[in-house]
Amino acid sequence: MGRTRTLDDQLPAVEPEVDLRVLSEGLADEDPEVREECAQKLANAKRPEAAPFLRHALDDDAEQVRMWGAFGLGLLAREEDRDALSHAAKSDESPLVRVWATFGLAQIGDATAAPALVAFLDLPDLELKSNAADALLSLDDPSHVRPLLKRRLESAEVSADERKRVWTAAVLCRLGHKEAFALWREGLVHPQTRVDAAMVAPHLKSIAAARELVRVVAELTEEELDAPVPEANDLPLAELLTAPLLDLDLSALLQTAAQDAELRSNLLRIVLRSPMADPEVLGQLYEFAGDLDPAALGRDVGDILGEHGPGERLALLSRMTDFAAAAVLPAIEALSPDDRNALFDAIAEAAAAPTDDNAHVAPVLQLLRTTRFASQFEDLPPAPWGDEPQTDIGMETVDADDEEAGVAALIERMAAGEALTDEERKLAEDALEELGMTAEEFVESLHAEGDDDLEPIPPEPEQVASRMLALGAVLERAQIERDLAA
Image (cartoon, rainbow, N blue to C red; front, side, top):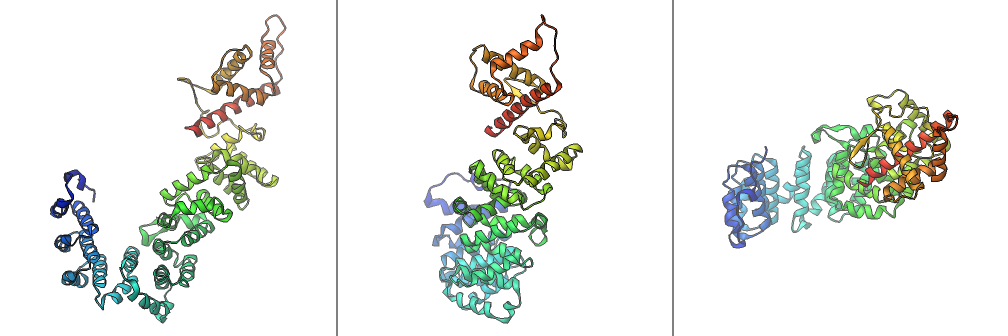
């Protein structure tokens, strides 16, 4: 249901002493999302005078409002609220509310609440299991549930049920049972329990758990990572496995990866092979990879490319151009000559019969045409997946032929000693470097070709092709540099 108005939209700024009153009034709002927000703020206030309002929230029509009412009363842990919590724990139609009402009873010290809370780990729904784990780990005094969990882990029932074992082990691990981590890790490795292990992973609060998630994602195939998970609303497995990294201190993991080659390599595998990973995680990984030294990044990626066939290498490189184009050439140079030639053959094959399915080849081909490997692609169409790229020069948009004429004019101005901007000078110098000529030699060659007093001698086709290729390469490289700067 879409939110029609927020709490901040409808409530004026209030002084702290009347804040609870205003929030309590919000519990009567017709919009359930506003009521939920008010109940959440009342719960997190942890003020005894909020208890009557939280008990009122337990009677709301909306499940989420009742949940926050139960949670808030649990945080207060008042004996006066036992009856309200007991009624909700036994009678509420929502298992989510029953979980948090039972949490409240356990906080008060109800002898039957702890076993009931542990039993909620057997609920079929993954989100409900996660709430049960959260409730167990949110107890002010978890000492009375730790022995229950240990006995549960050792029981024949749980030993025979891998899914139950994963959830129990993860909660126990967080409560200080060191041996339980290995059981959770086993669950992450096995396909039948992998989703459960991922869902409970955020509760571990451990960088070791984050490393294990990264390792598993790096080892799975793209087909496995892209597969939808029916019990998680058809989210791709890659997203389920990477989303917990946000709760497991991803920033600390990235800092470690800067000095840990194995971890860094696995993170780069996620970047290159898992486009269906959690978007926020991917964004941070792109930034991390983009900040690495391009030469070092290229070497790391080159090692990863060596594990794949030519077609797969091409797909991985095309993704790399989106966030670290400067490292593409070092990655290609890190390949063995045979692997590099196989990659170039794959590019040529795709360019010879361009289709929408292989359009990802275009950015790699465009970039390679600005490098020392440009001669490998001389016989390919200039833009097999579309029109010749357009480039902005000043305020005008011109095609490639006009650009080459513009660069030639810049070189003539340079030879004449005219002042050029930094960008103009770089374009001219790059073109001269590609041509292997000085500005004066370039101008002299132009005049020799166009001298009206002499019998015109047409240049050799190879010379024309070489010059056009060099100028085109400079312009394409300049465009890529502008794109990267933007």
